Image (tube, rainbow, N blue to C red; front, side):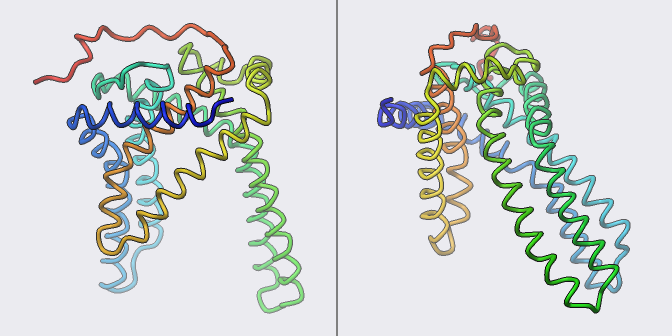
Length: 273
């Protein structure tokens, strides 16, 4: 597998698509920002409540739960746009047809949640055991200390499980994007066949390479004083587009050839002048 070609093609795709259409870049920045708004509002309410005295924690926790739910809903727009790229659309599609983007994004998020259920169960059992032990022996260090090892072990198991599941989920999401059918995201026989065609070693190494690239970019931007956060926000669309294109090309390297879900006519998708 030519990893350099994967990187070069994905970078060129993002560069030409975003620099060639600044309006698309701006809209993607907005889509990346809006999911954080409900959470920011609730956090601000918590801070104000603490300053004003003893806050109503039940109300605030309920508000945080609602904020997280709204954040997931709002993140569906950007997730839906990722699905368009994973379909293999060339060149970079415009940011339009928000209803379709939202619907695709909701299904994308639902697929990810279903895949992560085993990890959630492991984390919940580990956290539940820790809480129950702490409540039953709040002043007994001998009862709590061994639990730390259990928590660490639970975290390790959850991380390993998340990695393994992620290998299947990535291909599953692309299958959903290409066919438009949620069931194809869990067609494990076809997912395994695709990974075998790519080659397990090539597949895992390709994912490690793109992960390292993104982490290095995020780290470099993160250490820039004062304006690092602003720059990071600006490059979020590039990261999303680059990663999605990279995964799409990696999938295509198997020669899977699933039919792409029909797209709306270009004229209908073009943003209004």
